[in-house]
View 1: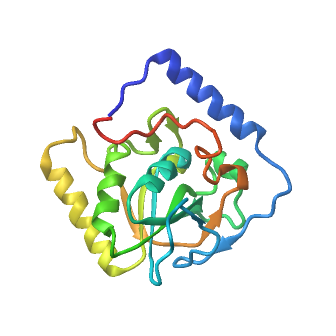
View 2: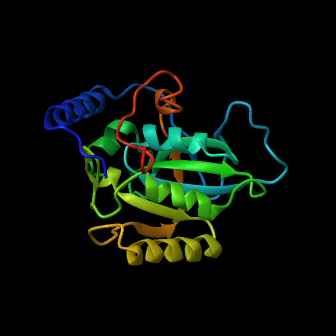
Amino acid sequence: MIKIPSALFAAFVGIAAFACAAAGGTEKLVTIGPNAFTGLRPVKGVMAPPKVEVASFACGCFWGVEAEFRKEPGVVSTAVGYSGGHTKNPDYKLVCGDTTGHAETVRVTYDPKKTSYDKLLKLFWELHDPTTPNQAGPDFGSQYRSVIFYHSEAQKAAAIKSRDALQRSGELSGKIVTEIVPAQDFTLAEEYHQQYVEKGGRAVCHRRKGS
């Protein structure tokens, strides 16, 4: 887990609060089904194979999480959005209010011939501290909680196996609080959130373990 100086921590919180306060607009957001991947953006230079599989993860601010998944060999496309909530037609401002039940989520398609769901799970665990409920680094709120949205029974079994193995490993000082739940409808986030880091934005809350 990365330790962030208190002054920098306060700056991050201030920036996040400003972003939520400034959010809004008239952009109409699109919701896709639990297993759909319409609207996901291809990784530059990666050709889509005839068959892809889909995975969905939430582990904090989706800007940095998406950027890391887009670097992973075998990932074909990604999008950020909102999933796991109870309010229809969520947008960023509503989700920031921590009342809709949604988590900031990254949906990924990947080439099963070039990578595996187990490798994506490994990256998921490396990107955050899964023992902190409703928190990822300097970000607080249920929208930043740790969730694996599984798209099949095989994914569910793999997620549980990887969680239990990590818990037994002794690498973590607390109990894993990650939710492992069926994939739900996914509302694509506003355009400016998509591939935010590639557009020149900064996302400093997520780092691969050891980096």
